[in-house]
Length: 165
Image 1 (cartoon, rainbow, N blue to C red):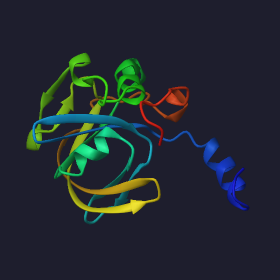
Image 2 (image 1 turned 90 degrees about the vertical axis):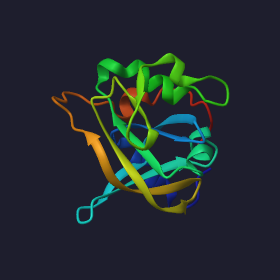
Image 3 (image 1 turned 135 degrees about the vertical axis):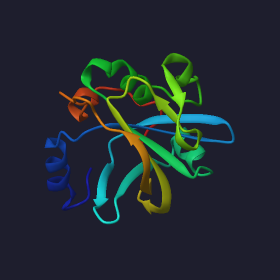
């Protein structure tokens, strides 16, 4: 049962169809990545982007020793890659053996099927309940050439995550 006053919030956020991102990183030669729904631009000047990683997630553990994250946006025609990063855990499989990628800025794994991506330096970390916020300063990226319909929460809400949030 939800705490008093929480139900209206839960009903509101259940209506939102926010964009989903695949976030990748690497540390000590170990690549990792996961599907992220808690992410948003937080500042224009200087440009900043916030990524929330679940404390239970393999990517969170790898990111703890990382200096950078890469944030990817996908079109719906590459939903298979998004589902791979949202329904599997690197605790059990190597996701990067199952998709096309290359080493990008700062050695970050960049997913080749992404419609757009940016790499960001982690400038701060802070607890956000069951997630940790990673505040990024963008350093490089690839803008979309033509982005028709990106993957959103409505496309992936049915996935069983590799780890609970």
